[in-house]
Every structure is written in C-alpha cells, then in structure tokens.
Length: 119
Image (cartoon, rainbow, N blue to C red):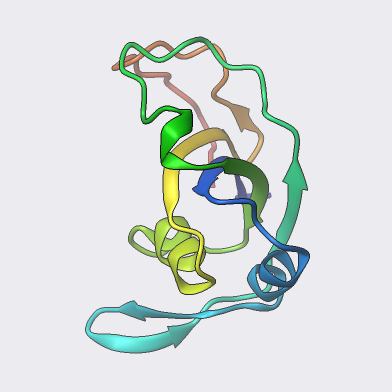
C-alpha cells in the first residue's frame, strides 16, 4: 500500500458536495495539461490534534476553516492543493501523516527517517 494520508485545513466550511467531488476525481492542471485525478478517500473531520505551529496561518477574523482527511492513490505535483482549490476550498495547511505503511507522526521538522523496502 503506497497511498498517502493527509489532513488538510481548508478555507471555509467545506461542503459534502465538495467532499463528494474530491472522492470522485476533479480536473487539475498538471504538466501544462488538464488532468482528472483518480478516485480517492476523503471525509470531513473535526480539527485534528497537532502540536502548535510556530506561526499562525490566520486568525478567526479571516473567516471559518475546516479539515478533511484525504487518502490518495497517486501523487502529482501539489495535487492536494490543486484539488481543494478546484472545488472552491483552497488549502491553508497540509499535514502528511502517512506514506504507505510509514507513519510520519513522530518526525520532527527537517528530520529524515530511513526506510527499507518502501515500494
């Protein structure tokens, strides 16, 4: 399983319709061409518990935000950001928590983890 799981904070209160579109695949730009993303797993979630950021992304006066969990079967350049923008909810923060069976939750900023037999 080489899928990646991301938690994504988006601008605004994401709708079930937008989540459904993300699951089915959306049109994004890739390599100068239009591309339809593969189906993926996606759901709205409550705010996950992460360590506080050193810099705040924005504050409440800029409007609401919401979180989704997304599991991709592919990984195009900036794909998650392009996908959320395509459904009208730009990404504010993206936290990758897993790539395949490798959990990333204990990695510190800039830390490297050696893995064997990844693919």
